[in-house]
Length: 292
Ligand SMILES: Cc1cc2nc3c(=O)[nH]c(=O)nc-3n(C[C@H](O)[C@H](O)[C@H](O)COP(=O)(O)O)c2cc1C
Image (cartoon, rainbow, N blue to C red):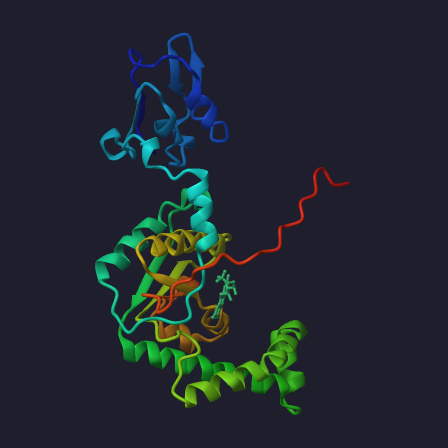
């Protein structure tokens, strides 16, 4: 249980800590200001410390010296934020140029500012910048993709395979057969249709069984993706590898994902060969208010 104390002389009785901790209910506002009456309920979100206008809360896990004041001057305007979001593109052509490891480290670090379930902060990453390993992984992904799509349409094995993976998955794999064959052909012609010769592959993983691991990793990955563009880098999420790895232990082993962890997001990262000059139109999402 975290130790939480309140400096009564500093507390201005604003009740902000009570409000932001409404779900856990750690604090109560009394005559003498706020009191941590249920510290055992604290789940370390840190909101009390982040919001207290008087720096009156001493929380064992959030020492003030590790919690700098937010500088509004450094925050992007809505215009610049929207411009960055609109300019982001998936990169499928990378320069033959390595990415310094300290930049990769910085990006992974930026990923942590994304929200996670119950503030679990349980997203970790694997980085691969060994060209040979990346090529082997691309080849293995194509081979397994060919294998599964082949099983799905094999007239003899089809019923058994459908029973094993479900009719929907089997249908999807049958639809992807042509894609698998085309990927294999392009690989044979010397292209890399999986990672586009990216010099770095990043893999986000979360604990097995974490009910929102996919969301946690997805948010962290998107932080990283946006930040990468600000550093002149390009990214592309590689769902092909994610899809195959979800079914194939050998691919997970190639990525050295610990058995206690679930692979969530695979990204290709590198310096883009081409600059995107234009923003493309997008479907404006339908929005319905108070539907019945
Ligand atoms: C979950 C997910 C999986 C994806 N998988 C792949 C992939 O395997 N290969 C690829 O080239 N692009 C992949 N993409 C990129 C999408 O094709 C791309 O986001 C989409 O075409 C829109 O283009 P943009 O990202 O440039 O806006 C994936 C994107 C997402 C969100």
